[in-house]
Length: 608
Image 1 (tube, rainbow, N blue to C red):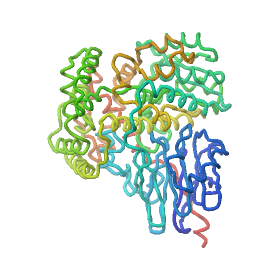
Image 2: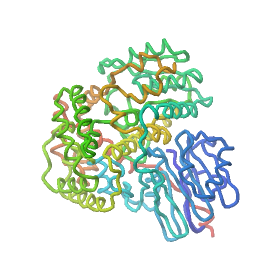
Image 3: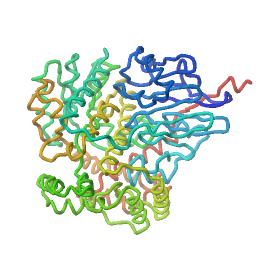
Image 4: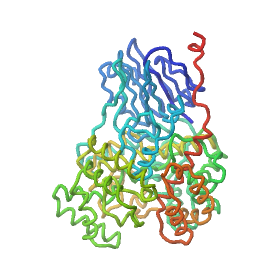
């Protein structure tokens, strides 16, 4: 696994990252697994700057940024294209700055002589064998919003830097500082469109640096990236086409490849094994990830896509449209914001349009949105805490429940009363500290991106470990997030147009064919999820049964999980998302028991 780490404090630390490489000019900073070309550093006396990852700044730009470092203008150091970790030293202060989507997360733990920081929580936990924290894991399973418990990580004694914050280390101690506003000043869709186009073009350009380039060619988001890349050179475009999906991705992909020069199209057919949950009989085939990862459940599908690419070329970069939905559109939950702001006419108009798409009534949608319109984040968490202290609910599809700032998932109803009570107490404490945006959409957008970013980081490990291919998800880049989320949710999610922001950004540019921009359909993997649930039910029953690590911690109980699996096996609707979360968490907990050595002895200290 790729990770970075650093020590801030006295010189007596007794560990070094195993296989770590020191970062030039930043004493006490190491990278593990990162190629040398993705680690760059500049410095001048007590001022130093390093970027780790895909950063669009050249060395001259990094040098010119040193006065910004000296002035501690931290946010400006995150404005280059790409996705990367920033480490900046200004005198006695050190700032460690992750990205806005959690692809480069930051954690820390303080000891007597100083502070360790790392992009891997598992590595910091391994310093003394700190166990997973059941309450934090309960929040992950029941709420699926990474920032709900703020600085809690999934491990005891390891702290997490929340989204939009940086870690600031000084002789006085360690703490987090917000560098990104909780909400952006609104920019109209038409005004934002050129900025989105420029940011996406730069983001793709950063990845097209001489390596072989491949790309998904499926939905609107991935197609946009593939077409942008094709302007810079040849692209191997791949479409996963399984007859069980019954979508029109392949038809659009074939037509696009025939229209856009530079796209060489390959179709990857489905097979009996390209379903969810395949291959979980042997967890050793999965790479270790830093937290529960959704792609552990879909690894067989990912490998099917990557296998033909690896056969053609290794050390390439593969573009994916992950997170396009999160930044280019918005769920109808923004209706709660319109109601809160008394934009009743607009709320009614949008509810009518959404209702037509969902074959329901506008009144039903507004009734679902009204409770969230009447409270803020802190109040919502107190309500959720009260609900956790009541008996578990019967299962109802999430889409039928009221809109919520932090929806309580079906996994919460599978937990023991004791775990539910501890999670409720943690939520009540978090509510006292909550500093949230005024709009539900702004909060939910950031949480969706943080979740997708963490999962995509796991996909990257799968691709690197098994195929030597670098996964690139430009829609998760901080500059893309800023450009897109500045557009209000009710404009990005306008029900009369499909992803209007992307359409406005690339209309009449010649980058995307007009028939692509006119597309209103989207594929989905529900059929493969249900097929996997049916075909691999015995494996899932074993994973989540009596020997389950989650069960031992009270995070799942046998009866409701068995009932959910039985419904799936019978082809009935079930809590797919909850099962997905639980299986990924179980896989991760089992992998922790066989994780590789993270650290080695610092021989300079050992022999002193």
